[in-house]
Image 1 (tube, rainbow, N blue to C red):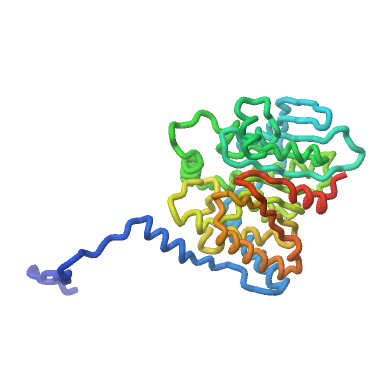
Image 2: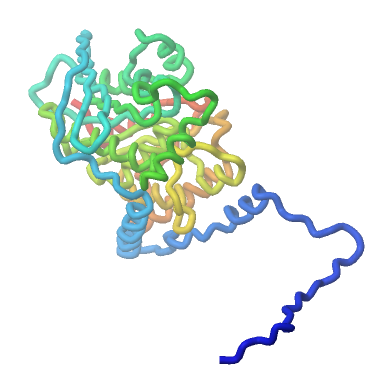
Length: 363
């Protein structure tokens, strides 16, 4: 083996920079913005036929589940009744579901009264951001601060739905409400929880998906519920989770997604911290339109407030364009609809009640 002589010197070529302004180093925000704008979205649906769409749905579902990581609910669990409240037209049960290897899940179960001899349709009602968690959706205006939350966002849609004859389950997501605990200063709890879970090999969105699927299973096994007639609704983060749950749970026959007609490609084009909505690696393969397209050919309604500042009209149109492609391929264009109303980031419920009644036929 030849050895380089001691006098061997490595020469570096130095390129002279012309006089004038030095080349600027782009800040990370600019670099990320450019990368997000050019995200691959490699598994977008480009077909036109039903067979092509079904094959694509199978492939994208598999990829999505891989990105999410573990999210299966427990096969069996114990139910503790925390409290019960009887009203003239419904019964409210506050429950705690526990299973080995899973964190306890607080839920409300709302049951129409008087009790019927026939099984009823059911709804999974998912809350959005906020310190009160699932309490407003269940109509707990007796708790401090909840009455204002309900008033500001028309937020008691779980209570509204039980009064329409549906059995309703309202889970508490992480890190909100009863699962919040004491806040650690001014930290963004969604981002903080997401980062900590990532180090444990978990994603926050998958954890919440598991609890939504667990809630669906609770409904499906309930003696008063017709498991063939289950729907799902939610506002804001609840809308995002409604989309994801309906996409991956075929027993959901109809869904209403409120205040969430936006894409992650747009959301993270600027500083963003909601770890509760992040699926690592998603933009390599698709975005919100692709997840929503997995709902096809089942009934899907988007609620969009004209004053909702969280929804960009151009991106909203892009979502619908891409999602309609799947619905059209499956000859189900009429099952995808939009309720555009005069209002802000709130639950509207008008077209939603009509759609749910049409698909789930409450009795």
